Image (cartoon, rainbow, N blue to C red):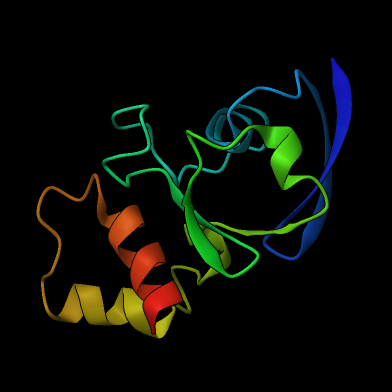
Length: 114
């Protein structure tokens, strides 16, 4: 176990975990952020996408120690139910969601591309 310092959605967070734990598990299990989701576990499907220092990355493939002291943005960091990000609003208005499971990856990737 190691003490890992993270910057998630503009907040400093500290977790005690194995440094090789996938970032996805720390975000979901330790920090209770539900935007990034487990899909394939291989970094291929995109359901777990987060923004790491301005780049879209698959959090299931990034060990948490590689994200230490770097800027991590999850879907929760873009907007709220009361004040959604413009991308979230556009996806809703255009009915872009299919089942919704991979929406996290689509929105986070679009954010980086735009």
